[in-house]
Image (spheres, rainbow, N blue to C red):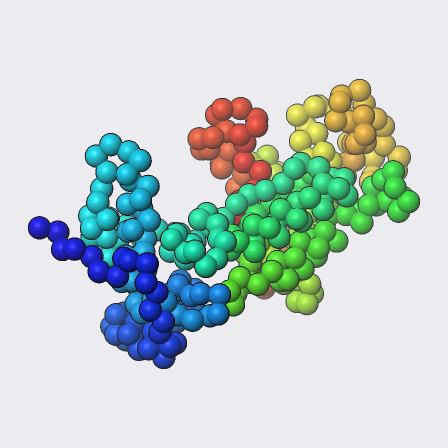
Length: 329
């Protein structure tokens, strides 16, 4: 017979941090790192900061109780005790960190998802601010966030507001980074991933954006690399950077040799009515060498081999609306 659980009623005993640390250290067989991580990140606390769980075993009972409540909505539900056996001692099922913290936690409004990709594919200031607001709202609920910057027009591009020209991708990286550092998550900061397409004209500035160690300290960065670019690297050929970054799909060839600072033509396609095509020709291998050098010296940017990701993506087979745009931290 399955042992009946204790500690699943509505009473909330209060423990001191010293009591929790001592009991949890014993639970983890004197593993100090595991103990500190659980006590700091996952142990249930009330709004006064009082500890309400003594060891991870109490957490597993909390999770089992909540999972069992949902199970009752379905036929042949697992009992609370059966679920607890799957969870206890981290033996069979280990939920994500946000579930460990948030499930059954009535003291905090918390996401049960660890990470999200957001973005509205807009390079208007309103769109940029909307993404910033979404990021802040998710992070204050404990979530990590990723979003792509490839839709933002390059630096020195024309804009219709009083500024006259865009400050480019890098300035908005700082904005999103600052938001991450502003949002506290129970003693830790949020996690943010910013990505940029290798085809974007601001890609070199993006790659070197962390040379200044005081900048963009609240984000990780990664480059979305295409098979086309890697082939140009292997063959040591020239490569066209363009904005929009998928301009090659439109097969506009009349502007490929125009530098960024020259006026650009406009075309009849719906998107291009307000977005002049911008291109610049580079050598692929020096850009790749710079990326590798930066990754060696500062561990960033990372590489996302985007062509491979899209080829093996399950959601993208359902159409363009389901294609990946970025990744979580």
